[in-house]
Length: 221
Image (cartoon, rainbow, N blue to C red):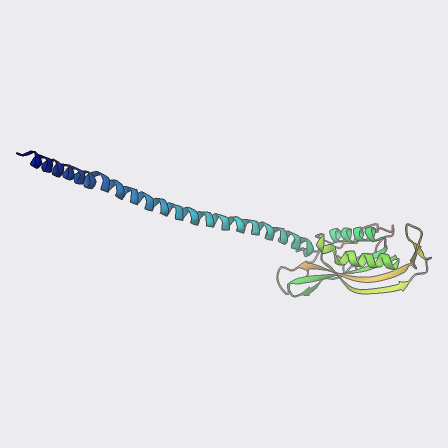
């Protein structure tokens, strides 16, 4: 056998060996690599979907916390019961901040209106025009506290017989006014058309900011 034939046979044997290595070793490895890459891409896709769901759940949780805070504020603005003692304390705080002097506070009989009840309050107090104006503003803004939602229904001003009031600096604040006011508070009703809950007799606090004794509620609340 000539030398050239031996080289050809050796080359053919090398080609066969390379082909066998390719088909028996490298090709399965490449298939495994491709399958692994496909699995990695699938896991990345699932991970992205899971992260998107997690972000949505976190957004929903934060929105739920905000809504819970809003519901708590709404429950303070329009509670599901009359809570007259708490309401009267809030109104007395407004009176102290405004500088008016209460004569009487009389809760009335709640009336049904759609999905809520209206609780009227008859107020009688004295103060200067600026004191009264400040009280009205604070009453209408009390819900932003947050506190009870209040609305001024009627307001009657009478010129008092007392001397002209003075501010802290000694300047004239105008004559003292006697004020009769109907103030509306609101109560969330359990269902439309429900009758107001019957309760025992309740009176206004024993002492008003002016030191006088307020009147008893005509409705027996």
